[in-house]
Amino acid sequence: GQMADMRARLEQDEQTRLMMQALRGQNLNDAVAADAGVTMDVVEMRRSSGEGDELPLAFEPDKLKAYFAKRPGAMARRVMQIASKSAALGAGVLVDLLRGNTEDIEVRRAVELRRTIVSLGPFFIKLGQALSIRPDILSPRAMVELQQLCDKVPSFDSRLAFATICEELGVASVSEVFSEITPEPVAAASLGQVYKATLRETGDTVAVKVQRPFVLETVSLDLHLAREFGLLLRRVPNVANRLDLVALIDEFGSRFYQELDYVVECENGVRIAEDMKVLPKVVIPKCYPQHTSRRVHTAEWVEGEKLSQSTADDVGALVNLGVITYLTQLLETGFFHADPHPGNMLRTPDGRLVILDFGLMCEVSEKQQYGMIEAIAHLIHRDYDLIGQDFINLDFIPEGTDLSPIVPALSRVFDAALAGGGAKSINFQELASDLADITFEYPFRIPPYMALLIRSISVLEGIALVGNPSFAVIDEAYPWLSRKLLTSRSPRLREALRYMIYGRTGAFDVDRVIDLLQALEKFVAVRDRGDGSAFKVDGVRGSQTVGSAGSFAGTRA
Image (tube, rainbow, N blue to C red; front, side, top):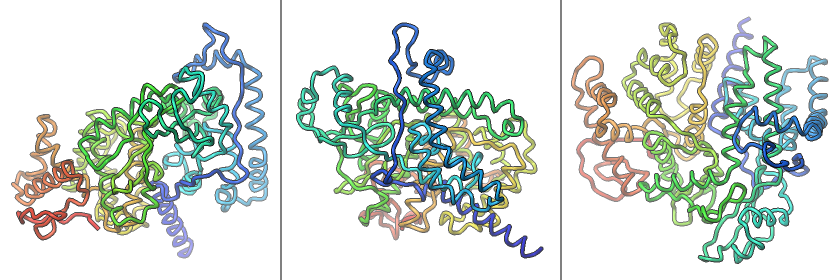
């Protein structure tokens, strides 16, 4: 009995370790080329027959239904493709189940599952990637396996790509816009592929992304089929209680359509470039709206190496800067980059940080921003009974839930997590059982914006911990928080500032005030000089002497 208990505890520990790995994106596959032997299917179908028969360009389930009702052939072909591609996998799993061989089914069948998903095209790849950060839906092992999903697939014929460029940009030949362009793509993913080119009118070197033919049609059809399947599943009580596929598809569908419209991506890039001007060491590639359309995207070509693969000695400072960039987007502008996998962050040869690919963005409301700031203030003071209310404000727990049983569990979890050093200093076994208890016993849910946010911050933390084991996100968030609290005119944030300085007891805390002022000083250093290492050590920050009005030790390596 004792042995079984111990094994169960260890398994829980293993599950937690996997969950942390999955949330940090430590297994994200950022390979450059497709796996050998992988092919990808799209569905070709007849174009719309004019008025009243257009494929919608935004996610509108009713219009999709009407559109595909007129194309039963395409629907039948797609169902056959899906069935034939997944038949081998299904048969293998069935055999395992019949033999009672379910022990490590997720691991054994994982490679097959990934290949099947890639061959079925972008909808399944992106759905797999979206689910790989949802601990409320999948097991940790499944999350880890799905993160290995590589979005790299074989490229399509360049003649088709060049024809698309001509059609989309309204020119007779590619050379009218680009004086040079690589004959083959330099990278290919499920939605499109990228060419390196030179703009004829300015001589600028650009990256030209061209969408794969029939991607919109195939994705639309898959979304439609998945949603119809979800409506059927709603009639199965056991499944319906655990997973609302229709709600998942609706949340996912609208994001996917944004990603398929390169004009939106271009507008996002322009907006982020403006927002990020406050951080001089952050590079956002310039977009060219006049050479961008729904299926062709033109942006500045930036030389650099992937941050996750760079061996330069300033990677630590750049990761700190990355965290700061995301916090600026999150707490400052409310418009943040929701897809920060390691391949989207580069280091330029002169040591600046490049952020790429703004197809997937997330807006955070002021209410949510305030909620996060209050939660951080309560965390710093370790006022856990207030954090329960923060969870309601942030949509984690429904209004009206009794918080009294949740608070002690939360306080144990956060006390451990706040010790710094990321996952290393956390007692995994206690944390595992606590988190599992909390999420299963109480009506916790992860709001969509939060799943993306947790993923963004976790991926950055994952890269940072490699170079600096004592890295703690909360330390990096503190300068932002202090600037916001010390300068905001909002009554709600003024109340939070009063709380920060006086706590709940009303006693003036002079150390906390010095802390806040120094954090503000760090904020200014980062913003004005892009100094991601802006911690004062013995009165010196970076190479500047700044006096010794209290020293501030942070998570600098």
